[in-house]
Amino acid sequence: IYVFSGLMVWNIFSVGLTNSANSMINNSLIIKKIYFPRLIIPVSSVLVALFDFLMAFIVLLAMLIYYQHSVDWNAVLFWPLATIVASIGTLGLGAWLAALNVKYRDFRYVIPFLVQVLFFLTPVIYPVSILKYAFLQYLMACSPMYAAIELFRFPINGISTPPFLLAISLVSSIIFLIVGVIYFKVTEDFFADIA
Image (cartoon, rainbow, N blue to C red; front, top):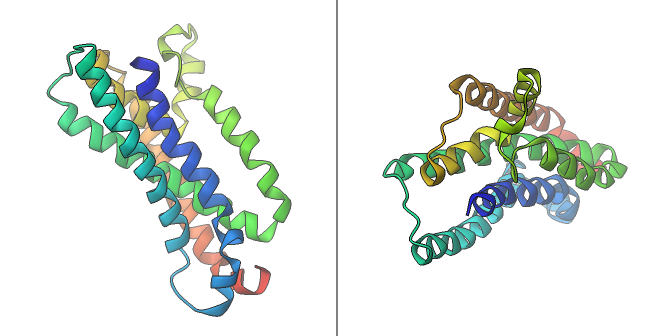
């Protein structure tokens, strides 16, 4: 259940990031024909990933019931919060990569490699407590998905994460969102010409 819950939240990021990064190229015909807020395209890609998450969440609930695993009552707060944090980090990086992908077409080949590297730099299948050096824990906390995964797991396993590490991850998610959306908005006017 520990690994499955981490993979569920990670799936929001991996599917949402891959789809939103390629979304502007895949919808280039629509971009050329009519004007609409272009940010809708990466946002819709993240929403598709959230629908996948919802299906996996139903399976998680079934597993929790089947194995009679107790869940803390604060799951009502932490699970939606974790989903929002995962969506924020995914949208920020996805919007940035979508804009880069329009300008530099070969960038789409780097995206699966980037997702794979971030998978191993985020404690999805292992706890961050196995790292002995504080520097490595801080480095892993820079991942925008670290806080989302740890917040989602807390009601299941009851192991709290140091608040400072969560704060680092939350700040990185917000920074990625701000930088990604700003870069997307700055380059948005050229999408119809380039796409």
